[in-house]
Image (cartoon, rainbow, N blue to C red; front, side, top):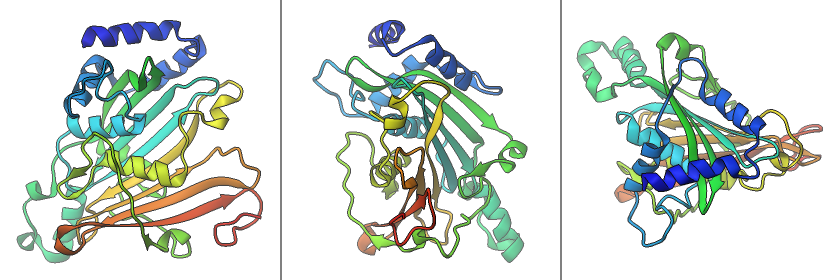
Length: 311
């Protein structure tokens, strides 16, 4: 199978949309200071190993989006995290189908434990191991559709983030190491309503009773209207990459276990709506069945929104 990936990677050099400028953008993204390159052949094999076998000539992961692949690989490569924050950024390159995906994962377990110790005393708080150990990490992936693969990984890199670096980073709505998300009371994203969402993917959907980060990213993209393949903004012109969407995902930061994800989709080719937001919350339900809640918001190019409508 590795030889097949080598053929695919080599074919990229001949792919009509793999221009020198696109490759330069991808290399600059991957070769940023502090990042170490990761063997993409091994990554593709690892994703396939997480999925059921297939009789197709294509790889098991051939239909997975770049967001799902990235989410699966970060979880597979890193130590399990009980309480943490994920910050997703997906960028597109105008005039090509190249996607640049970055996932920063922050271990907030030690910070939550420290807050509890200060409030209740060390004798009344569980040991540090129960809050999760492990570093803050950042992963970058460059993908492109190629020969039956929706998002083949052509470049990848990993970086461990020092506390000093992580503490200066901002994750969409809040400081990345904040143990809560700063969400204004006036935002429609507080108006959560029950939703039904079913994922039919062949990848791991749930982890310890909750949706996996990969599944949350896919649902957030679907409900926020994110278009990666065939994106209008990317289809026009050329130039530097642009951020198509960002998302923050909090895992088990509240008093009860649960997930809270928010995605912002920008750079829309719309004369009135400049960006859309979607919030997806998973909470424990009766008899161990989780419940999903969603809320929407919009940013307008002119004036304030009335409900979810722009002037």
